[in-house]
Image 1 (cartoon, one colour):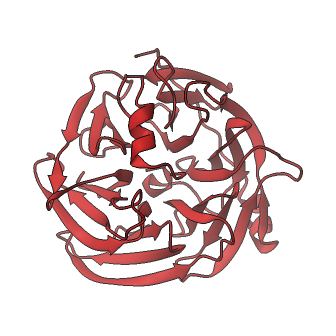
Image 2: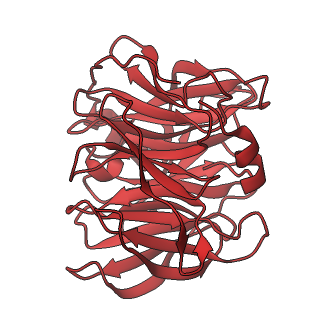
Length: 338
């Protein structure tokens, strides 16, 4: 998620319920993706603009792209003011977008569907909550709220294990510039929260690896990606720094993983993504076309399930956009936002 303070998020809280339509998906071309990787640059193309800068908040910020079962691509707009949709569904076949959910409170920074109950889960960074919606929007429920080990979370990104337990990148301490971030597991019924890692520097992206054996997570203010190995019960067996991202002025944002285990690391401060294999080798950089202006961050990506067409959320003074490119491998659950 692009960086805003918790106070800024609280000031933004806004949102009403609109109509959802089913959407189609497209598959990409593996040959083109392999060629792009070999050249170390994947050139993304503008797909569509979803939002403009909101006069009430002075910005727009797209996040958490994730495909629903009907093929709709769900996207959140973190900074939408009251009356504008906080959650949208994009029909990628027809390039149409409709609002799914809005309320007057949430500052939602990620979205993902649970494999346990099929509902859409959203992290509310400003209020330290995780809420869920019916698959088509509406029926808002609070899944988790309150303190974890004596401190309220600033939940940024989320990931589910195969049983439906939720893993949260808690960016606690960001607004104070202190390394109090955590990785937190919440049981699938929302009754138990466990800290798996702590003293992290603005925990941001989080995703299981392709085999669900461990978690990748990024720390925004350290530009590093770590790996948390888990046992069959979800307990931590080891943790280490896996990749140090040479981002220049850019910082590590959200993470997605494809069927081959490759990591797509979003960048805040540069409208691009860095792609690594599971061993930490830099495979490629996803770049926007030359002379693109007014777009500052590529926060996250969703890869079409079973296909290679990828949709990247890009934002800045020019508005909020989807850019598309051919991923290096097919999309899986871990390629879906979060």
